[in-house]
Structures are given as structure tokens and as C-alpha cells.
Image (cartoon, rainbow, N blue to C red):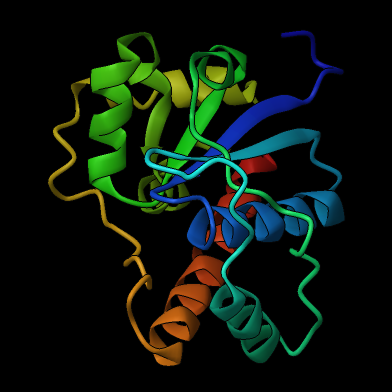
Length: 180
């Protein structure tokens, strides 16, 4: 990828109506503020194509951030081969989603990880995002200690707010690391 082209990132969760939508929104804001060239897509491992973002997700974003959440145009999208081929990095919310990508798209095993892993381990050494991701040796990890962001689906409003707070922390840290 030429240096002037943005990195391609897919943010992944289960249904693509809560965590991945929030994480992509937060990453877009944080990377825009830092001038990081990034193109983001969201997807779900088990998404019902076309579903709108969860109302509880929007409410949690607004309550936690104190800002309007411009997520209404989002529609759920099921991860497909074109998304995987396009991506330099796939950010999952759970280890089970990392395993799903490895099983369904083994060619992406070296560029899929949980948000927690990337927020804590992505090198910030100036190389391209893809080079830094590949340096992590993700395909060799078993994922057992990689850290999940709990799915708020089925929970109360507090579950959505807790997930949003965790996503804010992880996305801010990852944006700092994406800066290289």
C-alpha cells in the first residue's frame, strides 16, 4: 500500500448493531483528530443484513459521551470475502470472532485481533499499519488471554453504558498507537 493511501480496517462484532458501530465511530473521530488516514467498515459475524443500530447503543453513546450519537444511518452488514480481502486489519470485539474469521477466512489469520490486543500491543514505530500488524504474529496466538469486550445485547441499559466506556478507553488507546 503506498504511503499516501489510507489503511483499510474492518471493525467486527456479532450482529453489527452495537459494539462494532460504536468502535468504528470512536476510531473515526480519534483518527480524524490525529490526521491518521484510515478507511473503516463495520461488519458482523452473524449480522442480519440491513438491521439498524440498536436504540440502546445510541442512548448509551449519548449518555456516556454527552454528545449526540450520529449512528442512525448505519445498517448491519454480514462480513464477507470482499471485506476480508479489502482489509489491512480486522478488529474483533471477542476472541470467538477472531476464531470465526480464522476459520472462515484463513488468509486473514495474520491480520485479525481483538480490540484489546491491538490497544495494548500494536507497535507505534512508524511502519505501515499492515507491517505493524504482521509483526504481532497474530496467526500464532491462541487468543485465550486476548480480552473480550462484553456484548451488551440482552442486557440492561447499564450493560450498554459499560460496553461504551470500555470501547472509548480501548479506541483512544488504539488511535494513539495507530498514529505510528
